[in-house]
Length: 138
Image 1 (cartoon, helix red, strand yellow):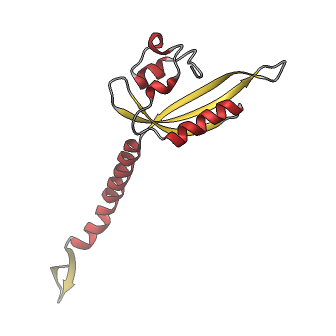
Image 2 (spheres, one colour; image 1 turned 90 degrees about the vertical axis):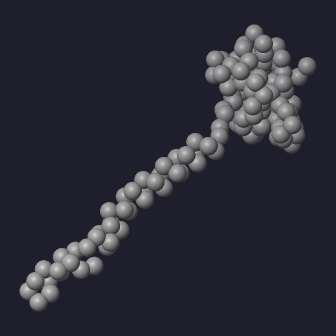
Image 3 (cartoon, rainbow, N blue to C red; image 1 turned 45 degrees about the horizontal axis):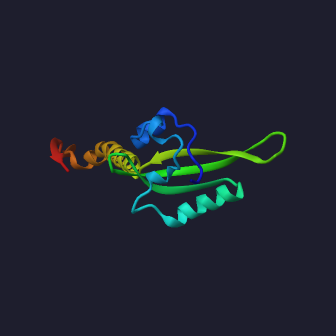
């Protein structure tokens, strides 16, 4: 039922935990779960029915049960002679905010490290001259 998968690449297998043999011929609804947005699924379904392109973010689930966010794009592939849609091409890309958060933390740490020498100049005692003698002053 629905639009079955006709091919999946090794990246799909790694992303989902399912092998090609397990999924070809099935609709990819098996990746959905309790956190999957019904509105996003409806938008995707409508685009396939209208033969238009669409990109949505879906909460999907790995075979082992862990969740991941998936950016899914579907595009109709038209017959070059008739102009009629022959198949729908789907591109999925997993994304996570964790790498962005880690990169942000790394950048913040680098900025702090770069600032420390400038701050230390104000905290390190510098020689000052007082009555001809060298004294340590702040």
